[in-house]
Image (tube, rainbow, N blue to C red; front, top):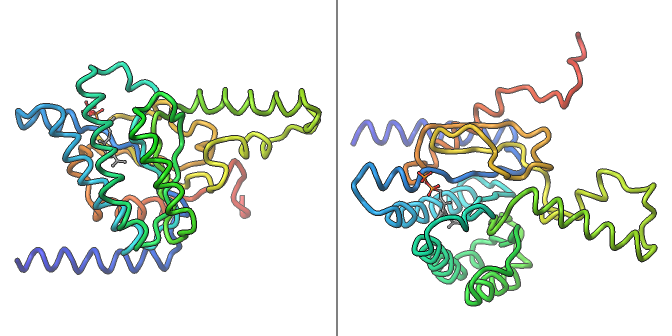
Length: 257
Ligand code: FPP
């Protein structure tokens, strides 16, 4: 009990410190390791996803309410995840549907704005409707933007952007010689939010797996062995503290060099 309150104290101090130092504008998380978390407990993979949703709920609440983070992206389902067994896919789709349905009132109350990155068309109709409702009903909120990457793949996003720009060129709206980085950035799903300052991936895998490839050009990466269901606010705080200790030079050199 005493140890717990000491830990709480340390976390409270660390939260204060990272807020004073300036929070990253956008943190994005690859929530990996649900399946392994379940296997370690002799549970079906679906139990890992169930636990993973609870972690996502805790992190969203903490990020918005306690931390005051402005943008949080969670990688919920990738364009590659369709290769999983149908039972697992259906379970995840139902979980996401339930998650949005149950959380919508809280999001509205807490000022969470939901946006989605990804192609919604292959998703079940009920989930598509849930997503549309959440986007519409939270559109005026501004405390925390929660970007759910759902049927998201960065290469697919870039292909889609190329097609959109090509159509604008063909119609004469855009001069091809004037296409620049901003033209591309503003054609991505993330057009309305800043690039992530920090990407966290749980479960020990050290790759981006087709996540925010354009947007991550200068993003700091944080890899942890913790499996997603075990990831907690304290680890998020420590990851941000480590990020703040790093020096971001964006390809330039320090002034004194
Ligand atoms: C990664 O673990 C998890 C997924 C691809 C599934 C979707 C994520 C959740 C259900 C978390 C909740 C999300 C929101 C937005 C509420 P894995 O299955 O790849 O684990 P493994 O690598 O150990 O097999």
